[in-house]
Length: 236
Image (tube, rainbow, N blue to C red; front, side, top):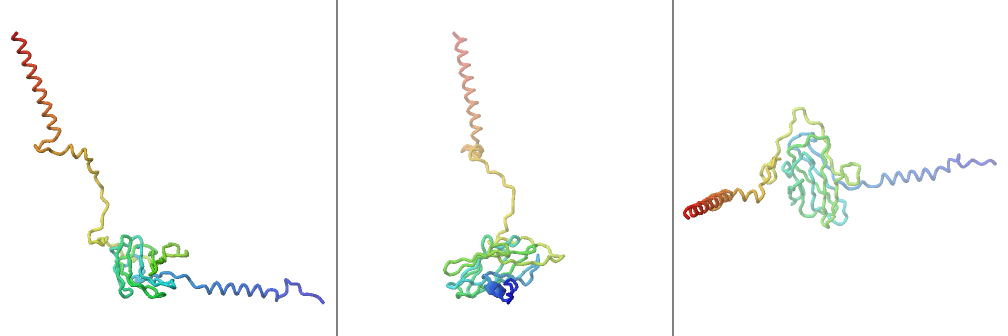
């Protein structure tokens, strides 16, 4: 009786095929990591008064989200952002580089959903919003990577090209209400020594003027003494 070579036996391939299928199922069954998503009602460069909505997914099994902090991208200042809607009782607060939204800790497993209104989106193809979400137990999720394929990608808003007639708006006042600082050429302050030489004394004259007067008096006194001595010598 002839035997079928092992390499040609179809049954010999079943274990390998089953293993490959099982691996594929495992890979597709792994849940995606929690993250923060962003979308806008007008996702277009230089669009004005845009409502930007965020969905910060909860990934902790023991504590709820209590605060979300966002670092704004280049082209959006803290003064350009206003609070829209969010969890009940949560408040909005501007920071030096962005803003925070937070309040009472949410229920464990509940995502934080909120929105802000941006005065104008920058002229860019995509806008990343680096996000840090803090839980009641102090744990922090850092969604700050600019690589969308990274382990902790920042929520990024992709924008369409600006409209032909769109123009950048003038800068907003700072959060405190005063105009944003502009770069100016500074003049070095005089040194303490230089400042002292320019001060007047109680008589209204500078120290240099008094020095000149004193020198003149000394010269005059010396001249008088010399004249007296000469007269005394002539009378002998």
